Length: 197
Ligand code: AMP
Image (cartoon, rainbow, N blue to C red; front, side):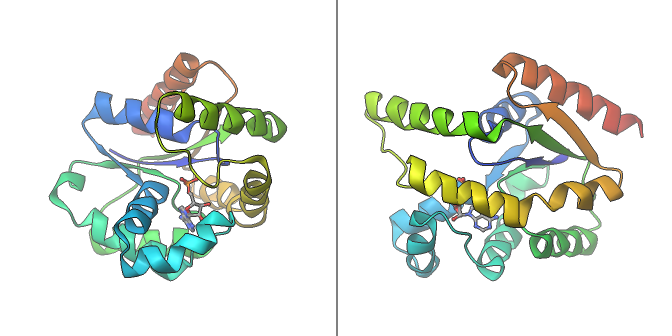
């Protein structure tokens, strides 16, 4: 199974991706996690990406497409994957189409999380507080100012992906403000519906 989770930062994509991984034996490909790992490891990509990420802006399509192309080649991704945080621009979506075409692979569904963007700011503050309380590192970009910038990037660049995938008959929308278990149920229903098409 190959899925894309689409929605603004803080919409719950990561939480649902983890559940999909457990249930379907696929891997989560989170470009945010991969980039944070590169920053922590101090790789060339990490050094290039750090300031951009800290400012809540988007890393270049070239870098992100490159890391996804490499990651999809890994054996554990052959069984399927859920993309979380990628694609974020039309150029990335087109690059993904080409990558999958080359490998004779197809996407099964794109799940769009519909959310109240203002409520997300509260969620992100909570996420930072919870990480702190658990003694985990707090993401530098999980503060209200940078978060608003990330929302702007979403509106400017990523929102265009909904019509892109709707035009291809792949878009399924779920209510991302519903309780976590309800969102999960709605995603499973969307996957069943997609598999019937
Ligand atoms: P995320 O964990 O998905 O919220 O991503 C955190 C940050 O990583 C974003 O604010 C961007 O700076 C960068 N990033 C993650 N995925 C992408 C992507 N597909 N394209 C560009 N930048 C990305």
